[in-house]
Length: 389
Image (tube, rainbow, N blue to C red; front, side, top):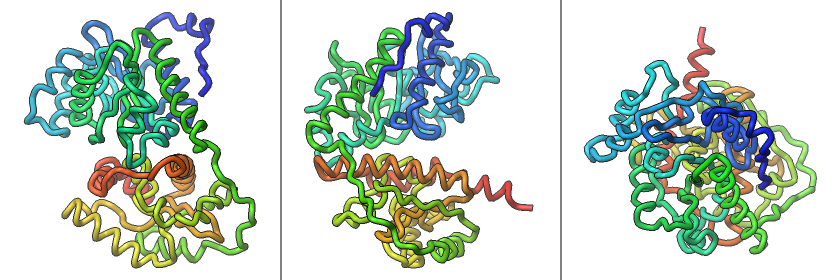
């Protein structure tokens, strides 16, 4: 992972917030670190936290996209165990220094509890490829040691912030530069902008080098031609099951063809996505045959077991179909989201492939992924509402 810090450019940013925005863009410019809306950054003064607001992409974030909040008030919120995430988010809004500022990131409390002035949070592919295995804690201890203790998976918000605070207070040493978030990504921190940014890259490079040394970095490719067949019938059937037309994107790259032709595809591809939030685009499971109706019925049943009546808010039809002849077929509510889903799944394939090359690939639990689909989804409904006459 290339360090893009440039002293001459850094000197052009004369305020901490301008510098914070610049280093955030450095992170956001690399899709191996941050995908669509993922990741967030912050810096602190003695009494104020400046955190990236919700809805802004790190690749293009500017100073107005950060929100200033009362740091002491934020930290006090975690002392109230009765507050659930919804209650916490309402209270966070009241901590804003300016009411017109952007809605704070859902990770605001995570940034608040880290006792370092500069904090980076990314969903780095290489780190997920190291950590998303059955032996997560043992493997991460080998790779990162005291540099970055592992935080067990918790949903974003108060639960994750409390878990990070606990792990930091019990496991961090003077050598600690970050935290590995199981099934989520990485947090890094430092005393200034350069150190914090560099510490994130240091952890990512440790992961990359470890994977290379284990023979788990090089991705397989299959250059055998895909069959000359159309996925249009499949698109029509999935659209009918969903109740609205879906756009189709087909990935027949050598990596995609190697993936759909894996001997153990049925095992590896059905563990779930590398992070639960990916499921809002890709769904938890791909379609491995042409039984759209059977997939939808089983998926709906699993959602209902986990979410109860709230399951009705989650579409149960597939968004990824894997076929050894066709390739990876990706479906989206429009071409824009089909392309986004394709890129997210491509990164997921790389993560799952590398993880399976050094251990047994694992994803978060069915309950956690189902909750993420409910909690973080909804963009398709918004698109459909705008489409309606």
